[in-house]
Length: 548
Image (tube, rainbow, N blue to C red; front, side):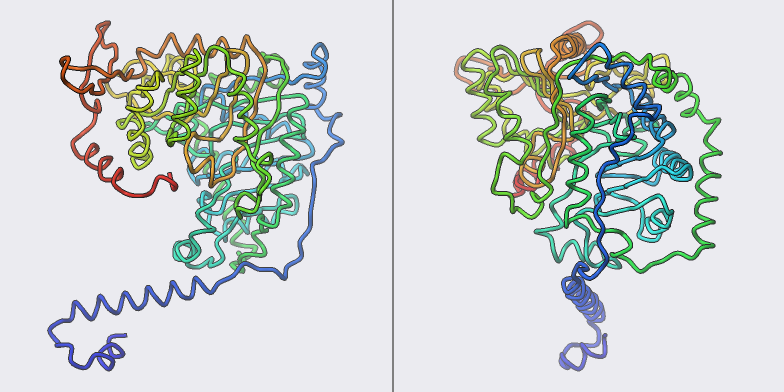
């Protein structure tokens, strides 16, 4: 490369070796980008469609669901999974109980402890003859093509990647060269066993979502359901699975592992799982009792009408002119019918001017609007917080009540979830506690209905990615969630207020909280460093709101 540059630029002094190296690397990067940009997704491969298995009523899960729904015709039963350990156990239990099918759809699947343990349980189900359809977002999944091909080689498992990058060997460069398409991702999260029981919510598959990391505690929420709503989730899964945007991993990559490599990988996975059986996290799982209650049919459910709201998979290509096929338009009637109260829980909250105007109009007609989101100290995406902080003053002026989560958390006596039972409910900080970060996505309308799903209240979820969620009409459950959240808000978060130092001074934002039973006020982003505040300010200067 240097020789070529020297021949092209003969007057360049020899002492400028660093310049030559820089030009060489830039040339190589340009060549790789051009190569990645020339890559295209395959079209000439055998493509088969499949749909949800319907003859599952005689399975153990089908029989258990029928017993639980016997006194509740035409409605669904829902159970909220607040604790990360319970949410993980629920997935393990469903994989263990499945007899005919597992349909699994995720944005992120990490190759950490929980990712490996759940994968091993899914492989066990496939060994029993269960048909497994695994649909993953190509950017979010941690596994390389060889590992995915090894999983896909099981006769009862098929792996598909949604909206994949064409250049498999240079994926990052491939994403950069086709950014307008690959920036649009499948953010959906669902886990369905035998078309009888499903889980939808905010959690991906990874240690931070299930309280298996000592340094991070994501406060999150999933909804486990039985009844007619399960069939709706399955129909949406089929739409994504059979979409032209879902590519079999076998059609994307030729990196075929040998039989020996597959056996070694499987043996290594099972040995890893065995090594985790006596650890602290395993003990926390054993103390939960959720799996036993689920198997015994004693898990408490709330019953009511439930419906799925989800984006059309073709939203990725920006080809869906029919807005009724998108998630947010299907939620708008819930906003329009509000009479008294709206609670919004979203880790990433960037309402934009239109969102502020809508919330202002609700407040003006007497609707109490409360928002719980991450503080700068608790967020895991500072760029999104920078987008949100530009709207805080306008939201407070509009009468919206803003709360931001504290970055500290204690675990309850059972060693499991963040203490408290509302979405994102955590207790006061203590020495050695984990870093708390809100990840639940919950909307509660007039204490009569609630939405639980994958959608954040930001431009990325609304305009760019695909999302899914469930709306449940159940006033007792909705009211209980609001009451529990209210009972913890002063301890778990900062309430934002506009205050003036005097009659002639402009109002400034203050953060109010309770510490040791006393009200405490902060005049700048609490529990943050100068670097964190500078970084958020710098991000706020960039024209990236549409990407947040």
